[in-house]
Length: 166
Image 1 (cartoon, rainbow, N blue to C red):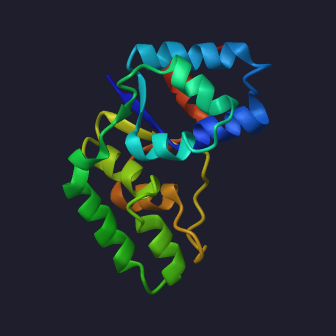
Image 2 (cartoon, helix red, strand yellow):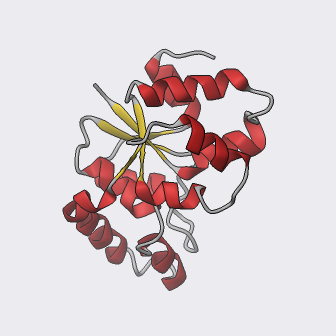
């Protein structure tokens, strides 16, 4: 069964722009259901990004996501090495700050790619980021996914693949 691994922007953009928690109850109910079924997960680094605002989104996550929703990313260090090697091989393209940000051990992006790279048949990245291969000041998750043959998609594509509506 495919498992969809969510980037922090899945939650943040949904809450702030498209599906506010106080308005789009159906969306958040569906997220809770899929999380309880284990069809969507995320990683500890995303949790850290979400649990630092002390806002309604953090409260919703604490109260509605299963205890084991955020997986330990330290188990994919071999795959993280592959992501790091790819990023460093692009040092002639990306600015040093872009690579430093992408490879920062506290940032989720490279670890999300690595988590799915470790099991590319069953795990897919879900992010709102869009590929921008010419950009030099930010390494985009989709560009790393494309280079490393990791499947990625946005929120709506995920719901379509799952056959879910809300």
